[in-house]
Picture (cartoon, rainbow, N blue to C red):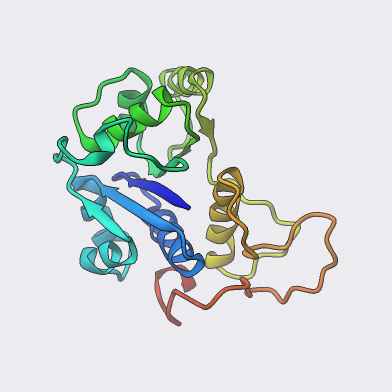
Length: 207
């Protein structure tokens, strides 16, 4: 399994970080593109260093590296997620404005009919935001806002984050045990995710 992970400067950097951590622990190969503003947001919102986040990915790319393999449809992968996705990146992807590698990689994912999952972080949505989402949905993208369910009784911020990451992984067919699913026997302990812990005690997602 090979996934492209785009992280923009929208609030919610922990969603992208956790996505990378879970993929690493599940053995999923990740190709990470972080925007310049994503690097800033990581420093503002979390206790992670940008270098630590980059090390979670199998491969990392600079946003201006349009010569990278991800710019071409010949680069084979099983899908791409933009998590979190800013409204600027949403607009760029929706209208084919591939001025950065992140936007170009998403454009290529759509044109090659591969799964593209977009996790938008904004509230409330304006008409412009909603229309851009509709454009992407019609082009085949999945619009997946970070709106976790509560039937699994989340006890920590990480439980809430994991619920969104779990939904993203489901769309790529990646097996995981991050959350208790509706209708399954309630044998899972709250706070357990079925894989080795990746966020240290007291880390940004445990606050």
